[in-house]
Image 1 (cartoon, rainbow, N blue to C red):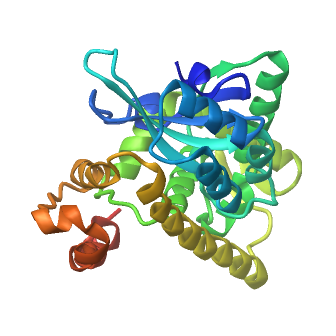
Image 2 (image 1 turned 60 degrees about the vertical axis):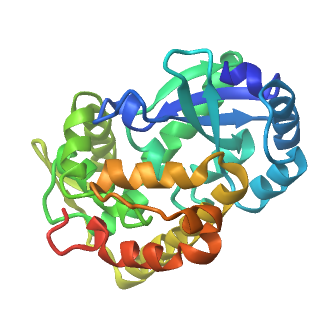
Length: 302
């Protein structure tokens, strides 16, 4: 359905997030996908024809070039109950860049280093290109994760550190225990991936290995820490800017945000009729109050 909606320019579809990981996903919650395409304009032209959109292909294409990816909602109303898909749209070229050292922020790597499913590819060449990008993203985890590593760690602790560091790169509504839940849900698959990665890093003398335990061959220097800190600060700014695009591109964006907050933090946000009608004018006090008190900022949040 998704490949057909975006048309022949669709290269691949990557399933990620709580449904792919089976980590506390509810039946009614949206399924998360990366939609990989050749050309943005062709993809949005096709989507407008097949599914209908509240925005123009020209606007969506411009926003995708300015700050990729766009995140949009697509609903399969023929399913019972209707199935909602949250789609992050990326060109193959932008995907490859986002999985490399040229990445402008952490959005893509922060999702692809976890368990994902390659749900559909156009052909064998597309599959190879996308799989290579995912491998690159996971290999890059050592570059941005090493400054947060403890003196000794195994593959599970390595993955836990990656999750905690990635969460810090975005404003998230997660409550305490979310990292533990993700580690548990993905343990059977992802830990093997990172144990193999750590062994390769030890073979390259970047780590010292003692059985299943690893140590950094050299501590991270101040310049490396500064560079990593800037990378995550910049990522948080760009991640926050993407939320502004929801207003233009994401159908029923306000209800989606409210449901997301309630599901992940347990906080119920009640909106007045005036706040629903003019959220950009009257919703700021509640938004600021939530941002100051969200679970991610609490001292006991882990």
